[in-house]
Amino acid sequence: MTAPERWDAARVRQLFRDTLPGRNLVVVSNREPYQHVWGDSEVRVDRPAGGLTAALDPVLQGIGGTWVAWGSGDADRAVSANGIVWVPPENPGYRLKRVWLSPREVRGYYEGYSNRVLWPLCHLLIERVDLSEAWWKHYAQVNRRFAVETAGVARPGDVVWVHDYQLALVPLFLRSRCPQVLICSFWHIPWPPHAAFRFCPQASQIIKGLLGCDLIGFQTPEYAVSFLECVEKELGDACQVSYDGGGPDPDSGWAAGQVRWQHGTVAVGAFPISIDYDAFAAMALSRDALAAARRILRRLGLAAGAAGVRLRKGNTLQPLALGIAVDRLDYTKGILERLAALDRFFSDNPHYREKVAVVQVVAPSRTGIPDYRRLRQQVSSMMDELNQRHRTEIWQPVYSIDHKLGPVTLAGLYRLADFAIVSSVYDGMNLVAKEFVAARSDGDGVLLLSKTAGAAAELEQAIPINPLDPAGFAAAIRTALEMPAEERRRRMAALRAYVSEHNIYHWVASFLRALGSLPAASSLPVASSPAGADVTQPAVPRPVRHTRAGVNR
Image (cartoon, rainbow, N blue to C red; front, side, top):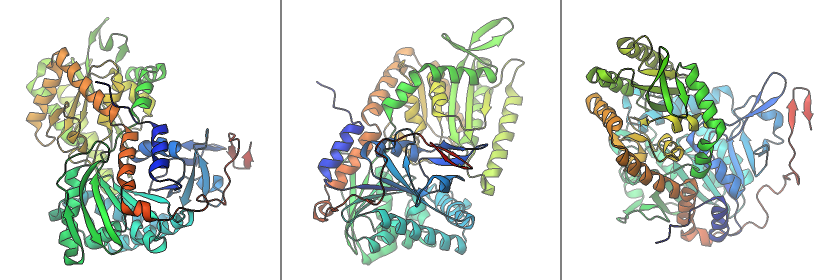
């Protein structure tokens, strides 16, 4: 039996041309894939961290088109003619159209409504919801501006793909301006049950905004069905909801159902997002990745060589089973719960002291929001207490890295670790789990994965954990450490085979197939000229160095 042909950028590009011929792709998101910031005297280009940008940038490089996003870099205006810049800078493949927001708008739309109302609500943390009428006004205002800017680059017949909870109203606003475009949306975080979502004062407006789409995608069937139930209960007889009882389709995702609404029928389905498996696997195999990871471990007081990670004890080096946990600082990631489980593990298994340690990477996030500043203090305090309780003269249970690490360094750490812990309390997907799998070209390593992370629906060979059960969590860590080598390799082989096939390009392909199958895809006109024909891409892209005095070529 031959292995299925795997998706890559070239196949997705051809699929787009075959399935949606003559159309352009416009991606719309809050976060931009490239950010220009001032250094000492000139501009440097940053690639903001995050699953969305890491997932979609390689896709759009392959397909081409336009990405509409908030221009958040302090040098973004300096390099953007009419708000547009070609990216990536080293090999331009698509246009980035930047939306300019004031600090007040950012506080209200992003820090306020998006991350203090929708984010906790969708992660079932109702007690953290902080309602403000002013935030909602900013949210609606910014969503309308995104729709206006998108309408400026989209042409009749184009595909506009809107992303995530920050832009829930864009589809409806865009529909009123561009009735002849194909609009779809992907909701990256969980969609909660109606019992939680009804606490949102603007629940019906959020739903109506999304119903401006032709297709809405979610990470799992559970979230998709929850959305349909919310539509039924919030809009009642104003719409018709039907459920599709079919199972997963490897080519076209999982059809959850459809909603008959004002402009027609809105399809709803599940399309689990993934990573660029080949690129990440190759990165993990590179000398740079291992060298960077070993430098980090040496700074932490650990030795890492060809034989694995070691703990220095006098004049000798003894083996150390290394765990890795990588998180953005967020209360949904289960960091405090993980520390509680590690405390229980070393209390129950004192013989594992000096034999096991975990490197915890916590990248700062949303530092302007009080809850996140408090969480950082809680994590630091709890980690100090844990280490004080169990440490010895040469060892401690947890080694902390409190800043963002680049993907090359992370890939090296994944490769050197014996196990990875993903203990989200609630998570749309969690791509760290898939990155760890992709990095394990040695076929070894154990993944401990929260039952309440979206990735758990796919990665069945991971060890399931309940982040709220410290005793069970601790027992799962021991299971990972004591798992026979043959079982470790069998599980990892299955995980790698799955993630390898279901890569980021498979995700895009399944979404595009579903979109292309809709009646609207064949009935809409095709633009007579490319989107943004007034903007010319350089025939031969050359590196451009921007200084405060101007632009030097």
